Amino acid sequence: MKKIMLNQTNAHTLTLTIDEAFDRFEKYNKSRNLAEDTINTYYRNYGYFREFIQYHYEQTRILITKCSQITEDVMIDYIAFMKDKKTIKDVTINTRITHIKAFFMYCFERSYMNYFKIQKMRIQKTLKELYTDKEMDAVLIKPDTTTCCFEDLRNWVMANFLYATSIRLGSIVEIRIKDIMFQTMKIFIGHLKNKKTAFLPLGEEMANILKEYLIHRKRTARRLFVLQS
Image (cartoon, rainbow, N blue to C red; front, side, top):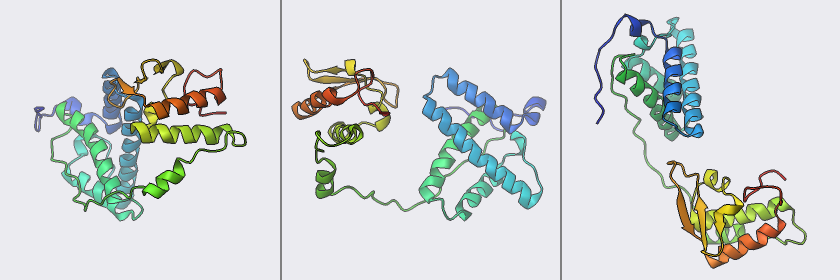
């Protein structure tokens, strides 16, 4: 468990602006080699918090610019601000809290602001609606390769690949032709979310689908799934 220094401020940290702290946070994340998508997510969620700061100023005429001004009350007001926006779901609010919390924890650990506890909202969990067997059968119906466009065939192959492997779309689009090993019936996945790599078994049916697909795909592209025709 990380040790948080409470209420340790000095003249420098009292004058450090939120934007300056976030610039340092971004550089820190890049030094840790975080995924570009993760860094962009932090930046996007910081933008949501900045929107709240502007709204807070319009309502109170109190401009929050320094890290030392961010308190538990400010965080509560931020959650209330998001809650008042009827288009934002509770799950989305909790996601935004999680991402801004990562930035705040960075600030806590460096004494840019005084520590306070950050809690997510209590929400009623609901099960995601899944495709029925009939719906999945419809998705996996093979298009007529003599009449369909390349995009239809590509999407059908990608749907089969997602269904067969359950890996993320972001990982699938990074697969290269040379990552497919038909002789050993395996496929190399080099872009997982946790920055790890993996070899997945390639079933006979999926292998046959890929072999047929490779006949139709663009020869100049190195990646398996060409997203631009």
